[in-house]
Amino acid sequence: MNVLNHTQDTALLLAKLADTIREFPDVVDRCLQQSGEYEIFNSLHGTADTTEQHFPSTFWERLGIRHIISANRNSKTASPNQEAIATEKDQWGHMRKDDSIEALAKYFSSCSVVQFADYVSVKNAACFWDGLFADVIKKAVEKQTIDFIFQLGDVTGRSVFEIDEVLDIIGQYSKYGSVSLVMDEQEALTLWEVLCGINYDPPPMEKFQLQFGTMHIDNFLIFYNNGILLNTKEGQSGFAGRSWNNIHSYPHSREFFLAGYQLGLLLPLTIPHAILLGLAVSGTYRATASIPTSRTLLTYINDWMPTIH
Image (cartoon, rainbow, N blue to C red):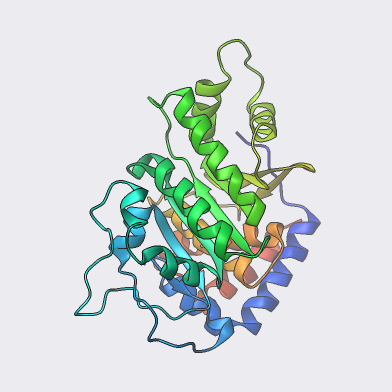
């Protein structure tokens, strides 16, 4: 799929990104340096109490949560005398029997961004995400306060019932925040084939917009080699990454895009700005083969802007 082109708006968006990075270099550096871990802390809110409940990274992994940006400075690892909470349990009901729910409710009450892992990679994801919403989010979160980022992954082999179920669960989260679903082009085409592809085969862009119309979410992002196609209630928008003579493929490009995207939501920037920040973070990673910093990001963006005509 090749539907995206740079526009003058791209240059304006990048100029705003550069200004924001220069204004908050410490926030940018801190979030990106922790992009491979299971919790990211919101340094915009200063230093918080460190004596609160500690959640080990294995706890978040079991729950199907990849990253959290929060005002709390909870540890990324369990304290030496504390065991992982419900780490080995496969059902949400086990978690409801201990004090995890109260601690989670307190934790999520100050979250800014929550990124979930691929649905297909999490055992009993629908069970955990539905329970989390019913027992934690509904009770602890003021409406429209969190940006939720979901991914499905490759749903090949999953039944229509399973996919409909998890999409319904994801849709519930939109009552308490903004929901983004991120898939790559092939994943999105597979989703169409499973749910809608028996009797109707429109062009890819139409498939994505029609698919979005069946979801109760805010943003449907299709990520591919060098750009993003955004589907919203207002229609479709294309965002191209920086042009390359030779595009190098790295296995973690999407992860770095997501790191930049959620950083943009934190700052907070608009969805178009957050998308371009994600593309800039991913592109910087491709160009340098290392975790981006505020300095390397600014260099990448400053080199990118003159190429836009």
